[in-house]
Image (tube, rainbow, N blue to C red; front, side, top):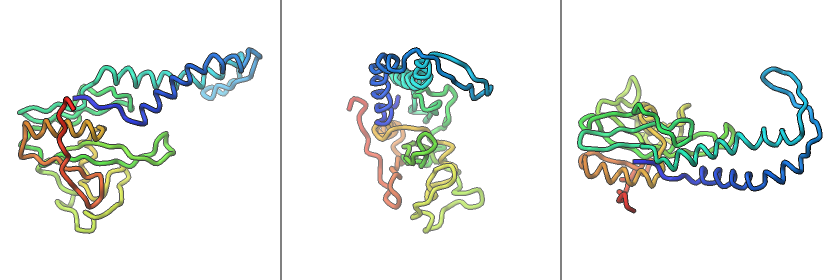
Length: 220
């Protein structure tokens, strides 16, 4: 099972296409007059045509967006579900590329429930935002190292830990979670319902309002 295209990644790809279309005009506008540039790694100054500065800015963004689009087209596996259990694969550097070693590889007998949740993060290190993730709670999980269950106030809390995970959920959930869109999670829920009817798949994105993830047929 692979992930679906995320809205913010679609925006990045569209911006990259627009930048490519504008690139000839930007290069021509910059001109070929010599300009001074400083290599921030070495501290040395260098002289190069002004259009080089445009490429230095544009190429990394276009390459990054191109890698996202290429890896998305390959549809790398995010989750594998079968009679024996569940596997989840982490995404590498936000590029849709999935690691070969599973972040989660558990038999159904070890799974207490699966959880759709939102992690608080900062896009580009500055802009506040959310990242939707799917994780697994094990049957032997404790809420914290010293406590098995959260308090009533913790269950209703809107606070977040330093890793971005909600206080109301177990502290180990973050380590057993991977990035996945809500639509892909619904397809995953359909597979879980098929192979492990006794395992709950809870939508915990809204504090204090957990609800089952509605299964979606893979053809839908």
